[in-house]
Structure formats: C-alpha cells, structure tokens
Length: 118
Length: 110
Image 1 (cartoon, rainbow over the protein chains, first blue to last red):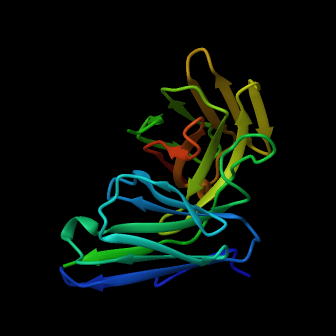
Image 2: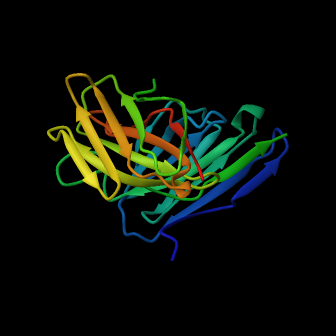
C-alpha cells in the first residue's frame, strides 16, 4: 500500500499548456506539501497545507495553484507552463505542521512527478 | 535561501568502507534530519536528531550534531552497493518548514 501517491509520474507538455498533478496520502496525516527539485537536486518547498488550509506559500508564481479538497489530497495545477517549470515535483505529508513539541516533522514523500516542458 | 549545505557534493567509496557526509546550516534549529533518495525515487527519512542531542545511532547509521558549529555528520559504516544514493540533511526551526540541503551523491562500488 503506497503511503503517498502522486500522478502522473511523467508529464511532457508544450509551453503555454495547463497541467495538473494529483497527490493522495493514506497515512492520516494533517499536513501536506509540494516541493520542487531542480536538475541539481536542490529541493525547495512551494506550498504547505494543514487540514485543508494553506499555511506556507513560498515565493511561487501565481501560475501555480494548489488545491486541497480534503486533508488526504493536495493537487497542484500549473497554468501557462514555461521552460523553467521543468523539474521533479514531490508531494509529501507529515503528522502535523512544524510547531515543535511532539511532532517530529518527519516527511513522507511520494515518488515524484517529472515535468518536462518543451 | 538554502539552509543546509552538504559536503562533499559527491563521494565514491568501495563496498565495506565507511562513508561520512557533513552538513552545515545557518540558523538555529529544533531538529536535523537525514534523508536518502535513490535515483528516480522519492526521499526516505533515515534518522532525526534533536537540537539537545549530540549523537544518535540507527543500525549502520551514526549521526552527530554540533549546534555550536551548526554542523552535523552522517556516518554509514560497512557500506553496501545498495547504499548508493543521494543523501540530504534537512533542518526544522522557527520557519515552520523543513529546509533541505543540496545533497551528497554517494556511490558505493562493488
């Protein structure tokens, strides 16, 4: 049973198109994330949702719009794709947000969605 | 800005040898975590060390933390070919998010 699953695994599209990546976790976690990993393997957080509410929104172009219909799902929609959007996008979840205390903040990652914009 | 920096960027060793990777960070932390990423896969959590701990062990893994130097090291003993992967440190602090370093690519030669 996959804990954090994201689809599609590969996505090849033309500049200017709109695409979505879906993510689901069956761990019962409250917090979900989207990370972007570039060609040099640098991981940067994009968004974080806690129980369907946005809690982290890093400096990301507003062409990127996350949506959390419930706490087990966090989807990422990207409008007007650009060449620089090519990357691997990782969904992750944790028991709760990083508020300290008992929550250790261990992240569980999906397998990634490789987006190639031509 | 990037919080952690791993050193070296790449490490190649023979099977059976020990592998040591270092991580330096800039701001105060609650805890520091190490993750492994196999090629084409997602990251997997290896071990967490809290800011009030100095050393932690898990199987063949040993992590140290020196908060005065803002640095951590990950030691993998008796390495195996299956340990070939990228290793990332990640820090959790007041920013309420986990910030990753740039990673060390470890290659274990059979």
